[in-house]
Length: 135
Image (cartoon, rainbow, N blue to C red; front, top):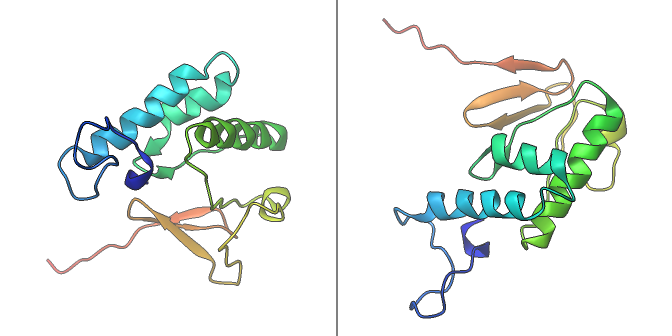
């Protein structure tokens, strides 16, 4: 993600470098800027971009399929316009799982995806937490 953010050409490097102190801020700020820039055209997507990303992980959902599809379309389009192509979507809804944009999704009996240290069982739609009781 960081290598997608361009910075002023007056600096030696012209993309954000992972591991620098400013990298997370610059990456998140780029998303915030894109959301502000496209809020009139994509209000739902802009709201999701501003509130549901943690660096490059988007955790969101919807109660209705049409709402979920709208979120996916708007978020994808906002970020595409900023040259941040999204490559993976995970969902527990069959209509989204069968979409051609869903990649790297293993839906066997033990299908578990993790983000931000939390595991999600997509088949059962439950969050899993590991507890270490070595007290």
